[in-house]
Amino acid sequence: MTTSAPQPRTRHVAARPSQILQALGDNRRQADPCTIVILGAKGDLAKRKLLPAIYQLAKDKLLPAGCDVLGMARDPMDDDAFRRMMGDAVRASEEIPEFDEAVWRSLAARMHYTAGDFGDAAAYQRLAVRLEEIESRRNPFEPNRLFYLAVPPSVFPPIVRSLSESGLAPRLIDATQRPWYRIVIEKPFGTSLETARTLNRLVLELFSECQLYRIDHYLGKETVQSILVFRFANAIFEPIWSRQSVQHVQITAAETVGVGNRGRYYEEAGVVRDMFQNHLLQLLTLTAMEPPASMSADAVRDEKVKVLRSLRWLHDADIDAAAVRAQYKSYRDEPDVAKDSITPTYAAVRFYVDNWRWTGVPFFLRSGKKMARRASEIAVQFRDPPVLMFRQETREQIAPNVLTLRIQPNEGVSLSFEVKAPGAVYQLSRGIEVAPVAMDFMYKEAFGETNPSAYETLLLDVMLGDATLFTRSDEVEAAWKVVDPLINYWDKHPPSRMPSYAPGSWGPTDADHLVQAQGARWREPE
Image (cartoon, rainbow, N blue to C red):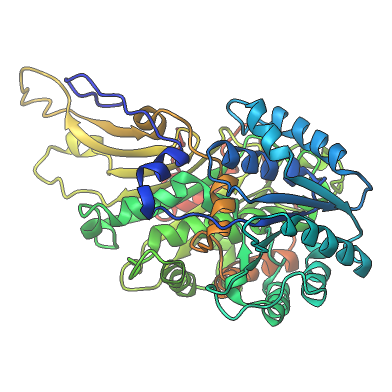
């Protein structure tokens, strides 16, 4: 149920990012001219996400005038063929609300391609020659370089070594140095704490932390970023945002699709590596963190790391009571999936944040494939009110207040509360009847246009040198410390019979028992 105001509503039409920046006048931040080098330019990520995001930035006049795109992949191809292939990808993209041929022609003229094997030193020499050709035509001369590793994690190490050894990306002293050289590394950043530490040691030997942008596209979503604003720009929530008022927190990331053609990857990753180590723990840190001293990248990331370090470790003796795993019933029939696979496609885990604000409050995290509905949300359930003044029948009707932050879809915020059900006469025998209602805010209704894609936001932030939405080395390792014990325990203790759940459901019944043991029940996301 949604409450409605008696007066007519005023519809607010959203401004695209370019309009917002224009309104800021001369104080707005401008990205430096640069060359975006996409390593793995013929891959799915480049065609589905990166090029549509770059096109939309150009359309919104957020792409610097002196910005070029240089793609690199193994297959030989000339610039024109690369432009045609990327043009087809952008036109077919669901990320583009309306294609503008004039914008594309202008962008395509600045797109280039070079072929090469990522393990071949000569390929990086050819890449250097192309970069020098492109940069020499830029006026003013700005040899800034953004290297995007749109490649499988297995080739991260040889690529970063080659970028350093070839001189394509020299190490910088700090973020103020010009020209700048920045490296974007896709998730997963490692497959365990040990591998994440190894990769961190390698990249930090070659580059400064200020040059590294470990990307998690979840953090680029407008609604995820809005969590900070919602929490810290509204004074009414701070006094109740703690163990004194909150009974528990639920964080859900549910998908309706199965693994599809990603069976080989998923067999190695599973739901914990794929969703918990990055997406869900990021949402937990944003929910539980203390107010940062400023909105600078390091101040925000410092507070997130404190939350991760405060998470109670999962010990072997506690895991069976604190975590549930399962597979959707048709998972073993998917391509490249073992017929006896025990890889979980669903998991639910109870965490505790052992600090002054949150001690004793359970945080329930769950994620799964082939679920009833596609939804990502954070639901903060408050404690039951002391309603002793009401009759027993009335007390049983009263539900606790819930504040829901919807990440996707139907992005917005909802707050449920109790009201008296309409009735002219109070009947002593029946008592007061109460009913739950919700104040519901939706971004689409309030601001009109759709939000920019996560990759638009993140690519622009890299060009601006803003690392707030990217994970730092200590943050990556702290997250792996949280999930490693769970992964290792499940690897060492395979189930005699893998729990399953029906596609289109909300998961196994064991997950219901997990929250019921804490006096709670799972919400069904809207």
